[in-house]
Amino acid sequence: METTTVREGNRTALKREMIIEAATEVFLAKGYLGTSMDEIAARAAVSKQTVYKQFVDKETLFVDVIRGVMGRVDEEIQAAAEALGHTDDPAAGLGLLAQRFLESVRRPQVLQLRRLVIGEAGRFPELGRTYWERAFETGLTTLSAGLRRLADRGLLRVDDADAAAQHFAALVLWIPMNRAMFCGPGEHLSDARLGETADTGVQAFLRAYSPTASG
Amino acid sequence: METTTVREGNRTALKREMIIEAATEVFLAKGYLGTSMDEIAARAAVSKQTVYKQFVDKETLFVDVIRGVMGRVDEEIQAAAEALGHTDDPAAGLGLLAQRFLESVRRPQVLQLRRLVIGEAGRFPELGRTYWERAFETGLTTLSAGLRRLADRGLLRVDDADAAAQHFAALVLWIPMNRAMFCGPGEHLSDARLGETADTGVQAFLRAYSPTASG
Figure 1 (cartoon, helix red, strand yellow):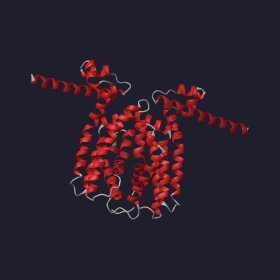
Figure 2 (spheres, helix red, strand yellow):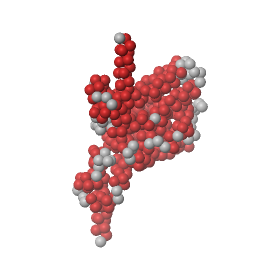
Figure 3 (cartoon, helix red, strand yellow):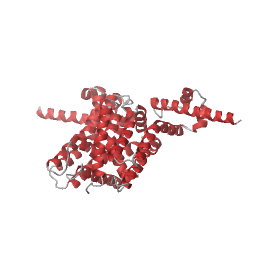
Figure 4 (cartoon, rainbow over the protein chains, first blue to last red):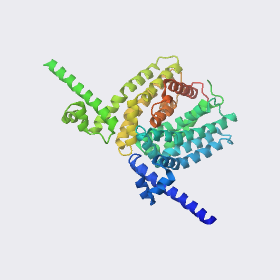
């Protein structure tokens, strides 16, 4: 009996995954308004009832789509932020963290999702707020904890870790993210250009938040 | 005869203005794809031929819509950047400049336009590139020149004025602009909150770019 339950559990998990994958494709291709639960069910080759049973409604399903698209990026940011707890080289540790943040600009699905949410936030404010909380703030919270680890060991001077996290993300992401939003991928988003943006941003951040910074 | 020509010139200018105003309303309400030259002509109470005679095509008209929406913000940024040429107080001058940049977050039309362009940039890359060049880079170029004015008089240390301009805009705009894009206007975009963001951003910028900054 136990084996059957485990198998059923696996089957349910697999179905959830298939539905989320199908939903991601449909949402990104057709937008939030243009996506129906029917189409997602058809693409995932499950019944509409199965979709509703697993996800209640379109909005709930969309939260899982956000989580799926951002998941990998979030994990990598988390790992790099934790590593700040035992590095003696803040420049190197923050450089790695900057690269991890820039991953979000390298992933077409992340960019498409972001464009979709911004484009529809006027009509569906709930969608935008969900994205803000689940995708945008998550990274900042992780980053803030990471910077505190450096500050605790005297490697940075940080009065307000949340403000410092906002500044770090800003310095690294402002140009590449806006370029990606407006111009799509291209030469300006090459690894070399992104690496340069990360370096310059980290250097400015270190000047502003080094233990010897004036002011 | 001369009077007649002047009058005709005025009439043409007035018609152009009316068309741009009508086009702005229709574009912002219906998106780029959903907007037709017919509807713009009807809303401006002119013939479709008049619209085409003045603006050639939808894309050309859209450039003038961008210019119209951003015009006032750009002028104010320009004035504040020029003032950096004769202030002795970099913190105050940059604080004013930050406030001018934040004007773009305070204007519903700027936010709507930005959302529209980002939402449609996947389908219409030309639209996004036009916005990037006419609205985004314009501000950075003005800012870069302003920062050079401070650096020339030894009030800032700036090796690369373009990178410094990107960092300034990033520190001031990253959070409020993203919040506005995802969450729409609200408490977090109150004058007090925006003022705080500007202050913290300018302080971090000054620590990173002051003539006495280390590194």
